[in-house]
Every structure is written in structure tokens, then in C-alpha cells.
Image (cartoon, rainbow, N blue to C red; front, side, top):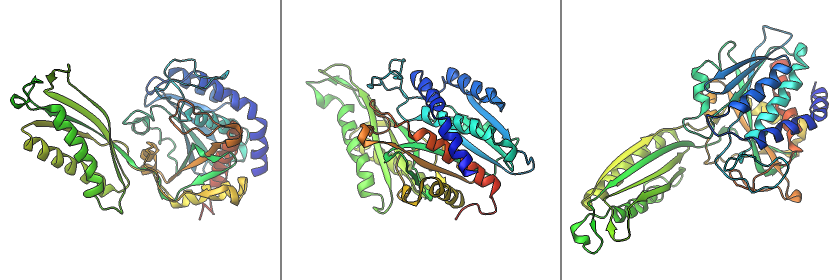
Length: 401
């Protein structure tokens, strides 16, 4: 069936690129994917696929039932939301929405999974089981749409026994795929810290408690946690993304608020981080005569790839793209992905699809206003995802290394 899948994906290239460009022109932010969801549901229904809408917000679940109905089910997932970034690219498919852009490739993920839906719906009588197609909203906005979809039954009726997803990766050239056994991404948590001082005239600092000064010391101390209080063999990131306070150049501020993120790979370290951070903030503020508020919010956990499913991804990539184009990427990355919630429930693998092309000048990173992909990667993604599903269902006696 591999040749059939490869040929069908190639024949659909123009149609799937059209899907991608339509989605790219009309991006929608997390929680607002109404038109995107309607587009996805329309394609699924046009191909005779059972379709459930409104799952966890604007989530869509499609189901392809194979010719052998008592076989297992594999789930495939794509995310649909865009980012609040103003696109700099100029093309006939550039974003038509000011300040909103598909800068993380979710338009590609969605169009690839739509292509998989078309391919596998045409092969359904030959499938020994079912394929669940999960189109997820709100990946970019904590707590993420994956958890909401799970809570509303996306993994029920039927429950999949395996799951896979891909993510664009501009650092890999088109024609390559990357896989990571075990921990692949970091957990992603957020914090808000309020520094409470005593305001007053800037010319009389001795009568005040300068919240701006205390905040600057807190910022420095928080960054020292990773370098001096964490085992250097462990991975952690503390980043402060915003800081706000003060009202005039001649007024000492009485309150400053800062917000940031914490990334870790180890669950025990993750649990420890808010304790160490609050201890640091408390000690500094007390020493400076200030007070504080500390709020810490746990977000999505790390993606931990199932080793057998990762082995299946590697095998399928090697068979489709060649061993030389199947790249092990053993080092986890500190970015986060709420696919982790699915991977906690079902043996799953998230892998990288090469979408870069230096010769075409397509090499800008994810979340860049210049981000784009080599569209030659799209049929490759369709073929690879389709083959992963078929090989799991039809050749599951050998589910991976």
C-alpha cells in the first residue's frame, strides 16, 4: 500500500496546497477558529467522513472506519490556531488579517491532515481498523485545546490505542523527517509576581520603598536560580517576558508586575521550581522593606514520546524517505506542545517534518513574521502520516522497534 499512498499524495499536491493557502490567508487566533473549523468540517464531509464538531471549543473529530471493523484505532492530530504576529511576507496567500499569522505552521498541519483524510478515505475498505482525525484548537494559548478536547470525549467512541502528530521544522530540509525517543519538549508553566513598595517623590527616595529597584533585583535573582541553584546536568529556563510599573519619571512606583515562563524537562524539578522562586522573591522583598504577590500556574507537561510509536515513525520515514533522510534528534527542546496531554492518555509520537529550503530562501524560524514553508513538503507529510496509520493498522504485529 505504500506505493498507492505515495502516488495518491502526489496526485493531491495541488489540492492540498490550495487548502494550506486558504487557511494561511485566513488565520484565526486561539479560541476563535470558527471559520477554520467550518472549512475542515466541509472537507471531511465532502469525503464521506463521519464528523463531529464543537469538541473542546472549535475542535473537530473525524472518523474513518476501515473494512475490518473490529481492528484497533489510531488517532492523528493537527492544531489549527494562528499567532498574534503581523506577517511580513508578500505573496498571494499572505495573511489577510492584520496582526494575525500562521507563523507556527498550523495551517500546514491542518492541510496535511486533511490530505491524509482524503487519502485514507479512498483506502478505507483496505484498512484493518479505524483512523480518528483530531483537529485541535488553541494550541498556542494555555491551558491549550488538547485538554479541553480530551475532557469532551475526543479520545472516546472509539478509544485509540496509538496516536501520532507532526510539526513543521524549518531547520530540516524538505524531504527529511526527525524523530525523538522519550522526552521531546519541555513543560510550560507561567508565573506572575507583584512587587509592593511605597510610592513617593523621586527626589526623596529615603521616604519610599522603590518597587522598580526591588523588581530589578528580583529579576536578576530569578535568573540566578538556574545557574546557581539547579543541578547543571538538569535543564531549566526562567524567562521574564513582561514587566510593568510606574507612572511618571519623577514618581517612585509603589507597584510593579512582572510575568514570565518556566520550562523544565524533569517532573521533580518542575514541582520544585515555584518553591525556589517564591523563596527567592520573599527573601529579597523582605530585605528591601517591600512585599510581594506570587502566582504560579502549571501549564502543559513535557511531550514524552512512546518508544514503540517512535520506532514506527522511524520505520515509516525510512521506508518512505530513506534512512539518510530519517534523522534522530535525541536532544529535547525547551519549547512546549500541548500534544503532551494526548501522549499522557495514549501511546503517542510527535515528530518533525522538514519544511526548510535554503536554496529557496525558506529558512526563517517558527514564530517569525517571515516564516514560510517549502510547499513541496506538504505531500511528503501527507504520505508519511498516512503510511504511519496504515502500517499501524495493517501491520501492527510489528509496531516498531
